[in-house]
Length: 470
View (cartoon, rainbow, N blue to C red):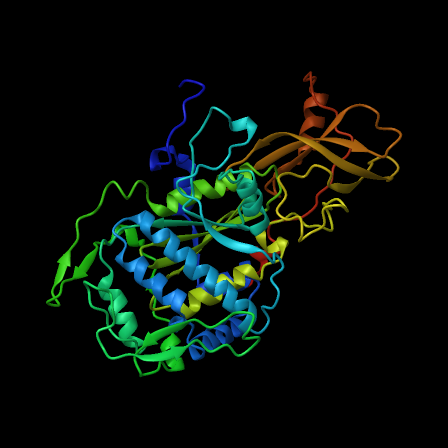
């Protein structure tokens, strides 16, 4: 392979181990996934779902128009911006209306379309590997502004808070839209003009708190109202939607099978998303313990969590239509996440510089300037370690991960140039310093000298502890 060869973003460019890791993903109920990863208790999740239903967010003009554009799209890329509009409007409404949401920790979080722009690769990967372009991203608004000022469109992998991978499978979901509108008391649409068929009335989105902060949009709707019970969960369980036959209903009410659009299905969405998860952690120089993603196949949405211990996905696939309230609540829950819920290293252990505190400076490009304390094995003296430039990073989606930084210390004894090696290891494995000692006693040459070591955290804590409890 030539050094400057770049493979495009297809299933063939996804590491085969990723395919296996994704296929073996653990499946958890979506309420458990949301509580463990996003920190939203099930009781509050249900409160939010009920509030969204009772306040009829689905009648918001931007959301309704986004739903229509999403459905009538004739190719995958035409669905991107409608979903962006829906998601960002949901974040606006959630900040004002939902109890416990309030000001988002990352106050400028926004959903943007990324495709067709390839993300920047880190220097270590230049000239190698696949060019990747996730469809949609959740990022900081300040980064969007910086790129606009620089007339640049390419995000870094370290900028990603959440990636969204979409796949266009069913070429016509118009029947789903009609059923959704009928269920919620909205007039059906003429298939040709997309205008309401019934005589409409004017209804506004209710805004119970700070109405001036998020102005209501007016949309013409039918006179019947949706009851709170319409927000009950109707979802498909996790057979991957891409593997099923796509059908549509014609104007006469007859089912018809749709031809698969091979050009639009470049890779199974869950595998492509696994590739994005690996790049996000591998290209951010150790700044993330884990990452998350949304996989959408037509209107069906599943939530994915990736860390060194494995992959956990939702058992259910939620429908953008049937489960609109649940998806809206989940999007707001993402926006309510602290840096630790976006996968940051524990800030009480690896501390950001005073000039770049969290959450203002999250996510960082790397850990340069971060500090941690270690203990000298002889004497037990504490040493302050300050990370310098990153040197090396090597990741797999699950399993062992390693990254190296040049360091400086405040120790008078440690004068030689040193590096800090961080690695995720199985707890039952012999510690690296012990392996080196055995090798040294066996006469192996050219071994590194280990001055300090420390065990900082285990992956069974935090997010995974909740999964284990359930």
